[in-house]
Image (cartoon, rainbow over all chains, first blue to last red; front, side, top):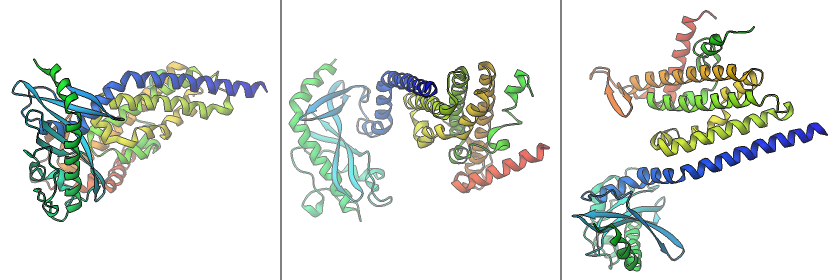
Length: 198
Length: 201
């Protein structure tokens, strides 16, 4: 009997101690890990969109509530003015599931200033070109956010990647979605942008 | 039987170097040694776990009841592995992306559990520390050497701390087979052969 109690006690104490230690380390490194994930997963797309930005868009970011969802907006300071935001949306209906798209929007002109695919599971050499071929996403530059963005087959202006209409549609859908989200949250975004004014 | 403290440390570097002499812990040895940097990173992570778990197992060896000892060792090892995972995510995220699943898998690396069971549970704290350090450094050097050989033959150069250096002449045909999975077996086989030629055991 004594042996059983000792086994239980030792194992319990050890597990509790280990759980507590890990919880502490988790909370101590949580913020840094979050930053690292942003830097390496979303960072490349954000930096490509904000080529001309003078600030660090990864560090200057704002959180806004969109209904139930918490969204992260990366702020771009261009020509000394915080005039652009970038955020990620997901387009449904890609060949391999949802396609993640980072979209940059100019707040003064309500226009897209750039886009970049972040996460996808499309076919290499076909749909995956949406990420690797910059000429595809370049088509989104300068489009107004209030109009739905479509591929030419659906009566829009985006030339689909050959052999990857589904992917092109998913990306267009994500961009359209981004426009809607942006217009919905615009008052809060402009309010928050003021704090980056120097 | 009783070895001097120095022998306890140095045995891990040559006589009992894990992958080449004991032929243990081959899963990470084969999987992550695509490059010198990855090999070294994996080795250092494993060394930290080995050292910490050896010290703690040794310190608690009188408190841990023998019937649940393996469970206790696993809890201790898993704790340190998770710490390594957090640290690597926070400070070396790219290395973490490269090594991926093999970091959590250090838990089941038989070298770590093997040292806890065979050495740390029977020896004092200081001896266990030297043992863990020796075996860990031996493991790190093995992985680094294997990674370097594969990277050199596969790409014609080596990457030191993110700067790629071409070592072999331009005319060297890049033998990319060496950085694929089957190349790991060939490289390991050649290294084992070399080790056996030099040793007399």
